[in-house]
Each structure stands twice: as structure tokens, then as C-alpha cells.
Amino acid sequence: MNVDKTTTKHRSESARIREDRPDDSRPSSKRKHEYDESIDDPRRRHPFDTNALDHCETPRAAYEHLRDFLDVLGRSMMVASTYGMSLWDPYYCDGGSKRILRDIGFDNVIHENADFYDVIKKEESIPPHDVLVTNPPYSEDHIYRLLEFVVGTEIANQRPVCLLLPNWVSRRPDYETRFAIPVARGKCELFYLSPLTPYTYIMPPFVHREDRPEHVGSSGETTPYLSSWYIVVPSSLCRGNSFLEMMDAVARKRKPKAWVVARTVRGLKWKMKKVRQHVNANGA
Ligand SMILES: C[S@@+](CC[C@H](N)C(=O)[O-])C[C@H]1O[C@@H](n2cnc3c(N)ncnc32)[C@H](O)[C@@H]1O
Image (tube, rainbow, N blue to C red; front, side):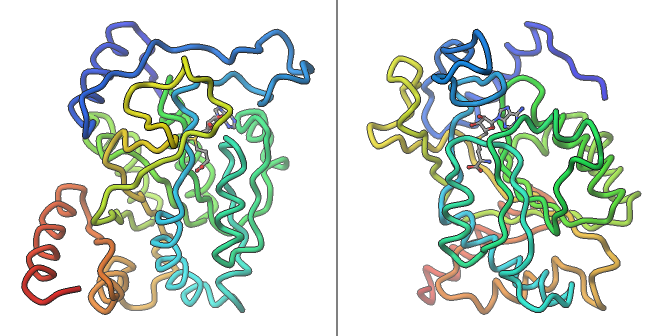
């Protein structure tokens, strides 16, 4: 994939990011990991280069919403228990995703402090997993490297994928050609699950005060962008109805209403408006 790393590109990207930020504060300049000399340095937290602004962990609410989908998926995959499915989150911050997923019932979560790009160099080092569930770093070209991996490996192996990504990713001009079209060609269904209340991420305490942008509160909480789950499911797993239809049925019955699903991110906005009108008129 053609990844543009020019300064101009970064400038236009940060303009786009500001557009989508709930508040208009700007991230501070990028800094490499403070302890960068050697991966053997005991003070170095990760065995890969990091950007402090990427250290934002997925909140519990996002996994609780995803669990509604994994329940439906588990039934379609005819696994003995949804909670036994192995979930792989290859992007490591502070181990929060494994802790929360375990807390809500998923015992089989692979989430190691390892360099994802090293791991995927050889197909045999990719851990066996049922579903890729991850929230990647947004800096540099990480998102595109992840999308490329999904198309080249996960879809090729017909594995379901759940990516928590900013909504602006789907509006990128090359998103269709680099992701949505290859997903459809790979005989997979793509849809989006978005919360009615935007997800608030958590910057872990190890991120130094001077590396924290203004929009991060003293508790470490931040809502840098509107984000949604980008969900890819092999069409062979749906029996009759599409996953979107099955999830729509779950959403209609769910109390309280917490999320909507749609075929496009634009469609999410329309559905959210409808659900809010319904909640205002009828209660949760
Ligand atoms: C947005 S955070 C999300 C962490 C976790 N997946 C979650 O959902 O809570 C992205 C993390 O990716 C990590 N990261 C950056 N480069 C990586 C790499 N090459 N391999 C694995 N993780 C990486 C960073 O340390 C950063 O904290």
C-alpha cells in the first residue's frame, strides 16, 4: 500500500483531526519514547518505538458493546461458549484490554507486550485466534498497516475482525479502495457499530505530564475523536440474515439503548438521530 509520510500529509491530517475533536485543543508535538537507547533498557516499557499520544486504552463500555456482537458471532460460529473464543489484541499499551475483557467474561485473550509488526513477519508466529479485536495507534501509518494486515491475512483466512477506529478513517479518500472494496471482494460483510455516547479513552499514568495534550483530563480520560467499531465478518458465517440485520434486531431489543449499527458511517448518524428521538419520546 502506498503510505504517504510527507510533512504536508501530516499537516493536513492534523487539520482533519482537529475538525473531528470534540474540543479544539491540539496535541503537543510528537515525542519518541523517552527511553529509546536499547530495548534491553529496563526502564523502557515497550519493545517498539512509541508516540505518547498513542497511549490511550479502550474503555470498558466499548468492550461491553462489542460483547453484544460477539454473542451473535459466537452463535453463528457455533462455538460452545462465546466467552471461550480466543480474541487477539496485538497493539499493547498497558494491558488494559486483557484486564477488561477478562473482567467481562472473556478468558482467552492474547495481548502481549510485543512488536506486532515483528510478529506478523512470519505467518507461523501469528498466535492462533478466532477474532482480531484491536484499537491501534493513530500516529504515523499504523492504521494503514493494520488495514493492510486485515485484508492480506485475516480476510484471506476468513477470520472476523473488530477494529476500534476514529470515524474519520472511513472518510479518507483511499479507504474504499484500500479496505472496503477488498473486504467485499474477500466475501466479507463490513458494518459499523457506534455508541450513542462517544467513547472516552484512558491515558495510562505512565505517560509523563509534559507528554499529555490539553484535552486529557487529570484522570487521564479523553475523547479525542468520535470512534466506532469497524466490524468485518465472513459472509459464510451468516445463516440467512446478514450480521447487520441480526445486530439491528439486538439493538431494537436492547435496554437501555447504547449503540447503533449501520452499513456506512454516514448511516450511523441517521440512526443515532432516530434512536435519540425514540428515547426522548418513549424513555430508554
Ligand atoms: C490506542 S493504544 C490501544 C491499546 C490497546 N490495544 C487497547 O485497545 O487498549 C495503541 C497502542 O499501540 C502500541 N503500539 C505502537 N506500536 C506498536 C507495535 N509495533 N506493536 C504493538 N503495539 C504497538 C502503543 O504502545 C499504544 O499504546
